[in-house]
Image (cartoon, rainbow, N blue to C red):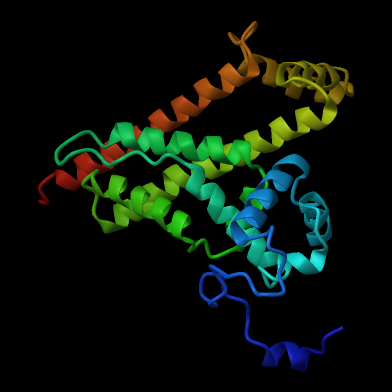
Length: 261
């Protein structure tokens, strides 16, 4: 185990994008069938299939049909590879263009929120990594720039823009994270989302009598959704929540434009 003094003398890891590690050219001793792009694509595929907890460089090497040491010709550490994989996922999103000058910023904002949510659900392993890394890869920065451009078009002042970005995209991050984990839980249980939901509600209803009130409150909150698919209910809830956030931005913009007394 490394001593505290040794750790103190070692510079903290920053980012694969700041340490001159990417893109990496193939060394003469490295397998000719590999390159960083192929390794990163295989990493994303494996993480989608098995999740972050089961991922290892040895497991990846087996998937690629090479030795683990061969992978290290192209990436120095597992963290470097995970950071590359995360940025690749950001690059999958089709980013909407901001509205034309004077146009409606609401449509591209809704579109961007939607593609971000879909990405989090499709790749649930990205949620913890987004909070772990600096997110300064080229695709991640392109996403951030588009967010900033669309929010800038609202006309909010700088403080308002920062708040709007936090409100909308931290909401989407949380919503997409919970949704992605639920989808994964259903898949692990071998159930559809509807089967899992009805199974869970049935189990909840059979709990101790002191929880009966909580169960009835949950049932009351879901009134009117009988016969609807879980995915449709979740989509409707997402759109209503987004409506509330957009309305809040509109209210702040109007208040900002009021003449000061």
